[in-house]
Length: 235
Image (cartoon, rainbow, N blue to C red; front, side, top):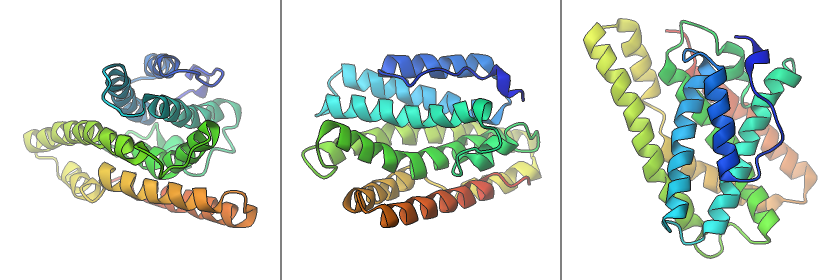
């Protein structure tokens, strides 16, 4: 896929701007593109989180708004790197971005590999950056409760993707697809978010200690990349 088709731009300053950017990415890419497979799911979830904020679903809407924007901008930075620095992609996103045009990989693999990179790697960083920017701590107030309220949205999105894929496996009696189903069945968004919160707390506690912070972040990026490569194995 041509990287020049991807829209680039300044960081989003609101959830509305983040949604617009995701819509631009969706428009720019063919549906078969691996990044598009993840982007569709992420766009849907972001729209639902935004709806929840406007409807008073979260106890601390300022925290959720800030977190959502910071979180999205880390993803957009990875997208921008495809255009600006294709030989130096973010380590956690490298597995997906390098094989996003491989026709042998199923959309569900791309979607979950994107979620793996964005949740297990980007989300802890976003939580720390959000708390730093707002002058709060992750374990204060209702932050964790609000964070967990997103789990239901993500679980529904993940189940929708899985059910669609499972239906096609049954209809086509595709042995390769069944192998993929077995592979991705071991990965859970909600479990990943639980781990991401624990990682965020660890990052928060070691902030300012450059050596420890670097070791933790480098190890995290490598571990997440390894998991994505497993999810993206061509059956």
